[in-house]
Length: 112
Image (cartoon, rainbow, N blue to C red):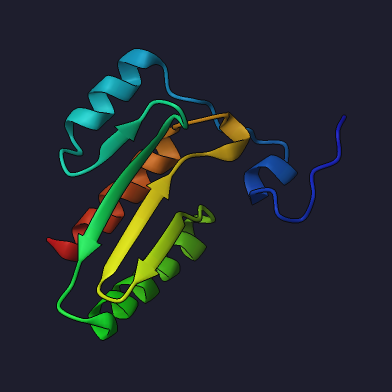
């Protein structure tokens, strides 16, 4: 059994691996996330959010950070002034998983 560093998600450290979505599951899930773009090369989804200013962008990132901590599933993201770019993929699953879809839906709920 291989060693999982402290940065591996809790599920992987506890032996509960997350499954990558099948092609059919991926297509069904993405239909419900019209604002998210699929990145085939990474088997990931991305979305850009634009706010009025840096303070609003940072407040949004704080809300997402709280969701991510609760779910133990953290986005790859960047922030430039009023824009936040988010990429979701599940590294220990080797690509897109249900955890990414759940996180995308929770993030969308913050801006609806």
